[in-house]
Image (cartoon, rainbow, N blue to C red; front, side, top):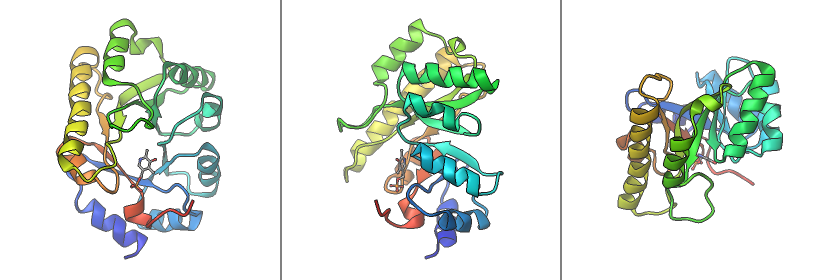
Length: 222
Ligand SMILES: *Cc1c(COP(=O)(O)O)cnc(C)c1O
């Protein structure tokens, strides 16, 4: 199928209130243009340089999401235009995003990344760390950051029960934070879970943003 056909196929399966982040990393501008021409407006990239290059070359009504591991020294390059940073995984990074937001007088929407997978390599806060952090710190400490929700990645496994359980940990944490710290904040509403292999499960567990790459563009050539 074509890129546009794949997007239509996925869009047709999305639950109400779920948005598609089209993960275009490693794919050429022409592929993104094709998706754009089919109506796709939200794109996700995981490298700062690549994101900046594509942002310059493509139409300016695209919402650019940063979905990768963000180094603090590179925040300044995406701060002026990024629509949502999915992977905020340290307090140091939060501070730097706030600093850049202040310089630009721009509040930058972010998601906190939570480590829910069994695998060692995935970045993020542990659920315990995040709960503890919210007890002592306040999101008001970062006036130029808007914490819009949480993001996570399940283990890369065939075990569907495990994937359900991992996503459920994140959903529960999300509900707890919402109740305790964001009850009057309408913007705290995003749960970014679900990729090509597990977005159906993620939607069953309450995803509001699915980040899908290879099911749209085919395999990435690194
Ligand atoms: C690459 C990537 C995706 C998309 O993965 P696919 O399996 O190709 O859909 C989603 N989320 C993050 C954080 C990624 O790095």
